[in-house]
Each structure stands twice: as structure tokens, then as C-alpha cells.
Length: 301
Image 1 (tube, rainbow, N blue to C red):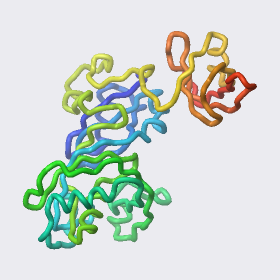
Image 2 (cartoon, helix red, strand yellow; image 1 turned 90 degrees about the vertical axis):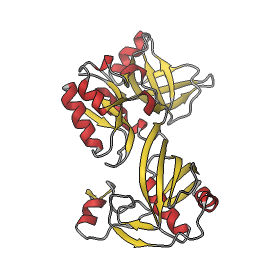
Image 3 (tube, rainbow, N blue to C red; image 1 turned 45 degrees about the horizontal axis):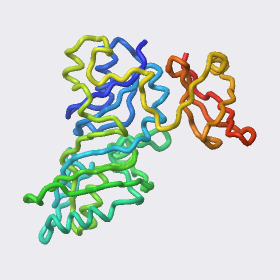
């Protein structure tokens, strides 16, 4: 079994799970997942997790995302994007780039966002889009999201404007487009979306789905492959000696000197050869000299 990450540039017209299915077939491995769904019409970076990499999804999926896309004004759809049915039309008289850019800036920061009715979010094990397709009521449960940047990057050409978006995980660009139209007293929907970045991972370093299907099955020779021991994690690292390595691989806590972390902090644990052994948490500060007790939570062996 292979362990690591594979960065894939998803094309339009397929689901994120379709990409996973191709990777499973091509690499001959069932244990493959991904770190954040892209809508079928969206393109761009999909971070696939392989083997032990799947156990790191909870940390990688939280990374901020960067997108580029386009918004069309004058019509709102039931899916908040171009694949949906038009629900209403509204005039765009008086809209220009400056007005739109000013309204976009009002989303920057933390705000309560309503997920689209057609999305994979679940309630009671049922996805929102399943409820919507059955004509059942979709919950109106706004949730806090963080928008770091939401900028217009083109002129307002006829009825479309291009944008760049940097946001927290869980932010729906479709909802931003829909709500932007409402704030401007008009209507709007998303017409294009491309994910450029997930945390430190960039689409420029990925492999296309077509290339994945055409290339050899050895991921070490694939563009976009990140070996397990080289996966960047959003927390600190400690290096275990041989005695500590034995304890860690048995799930036992180890005492680490001069660890500048607080109780509850996560830490990556590597051995003297810099192979990742585990991720764990600081469970106790010991004495006054900066020693800490680290408990492995996920052990890789």
C-alpha cells in the first residue's frame, strides 16, 4: 500500500469521488480519500490522501482555500450556480465594478453563511441536495465562515465579473455569489470556479486527471506526488530517540525536554531518520524547565 498525498487538477464535469475512483483503479489501491469536495462544474486542486495519509485528513481539510471564478448578475438559480434552474431575474441597472467591489469587501471577515440548498452537507445522515431533489425543506442553518479576501479582478463586462477568493474551509463560493447579488439589490449566481490552492498546496504542482490515467502506476514518478514523510502539517515537530520510538509505536507517552507548546497542542513525531511515527498531543507540562509529556494519538506502523 502506498502512503502519501497526490495533488490532482480536477476537470469540469466529474465529481470529486470520480477522481478518487480513477486513482483507486489506476494505482490499484482502495484506501484513497480527498481533503475537500469540489462541485462537478468546478475545476482545480483536489488533494487526494493515500494509505496512512487518509488518517491525516482531519488536519489537512481545515486549510484555507484560494479560488478564482466568475459571477453572473441578473439571475438567481436554485443551485446558486450555472447548473441550476433560474428562480428569478432582477435588473442590473446601476451596477458597475466599483459598486460590486465595495459590496464584495463587505464579506471580508467572519460572517454567518447559509450553505446552498444543493450541497453535500448532511443533516441526520441525509445530504441537503437529496432533500432538495425530493422537494423537502432544507435547513436554514447559517454557520460562521472566514473570508480573507474577496476581490473583483476584471471590469464588469455586460453582466459578469471575475473574482479571486481566499477563505476558510467550509466556505461556499456559490453562497457568496448568491448573497452578493442580494446585497446589491439584484440577483447573481456563480458561473465558474477554480481552486488554486489548499493551504500550502498549489494547483501548479498537481497532475491532471488525464495525465493520471495515462501515466505509469508508480506514484513516485507522478507529478503531484508527496511522500508520506514529507506531508506538511499545521503544527510543530519533535524527533524521538530510539527508546522514545519504541514507546511511541506502542502508543505510550514520552517526555520531551524544552518543548515550547501548551497542553492540548498537536505535535508531529518523527524518528532519527525523520520518518513520521505518529501525531499526538501535549497532555501535561512537567516541572519548570519546559519538559512536556506527549501522548501519541495516531500511530503509523
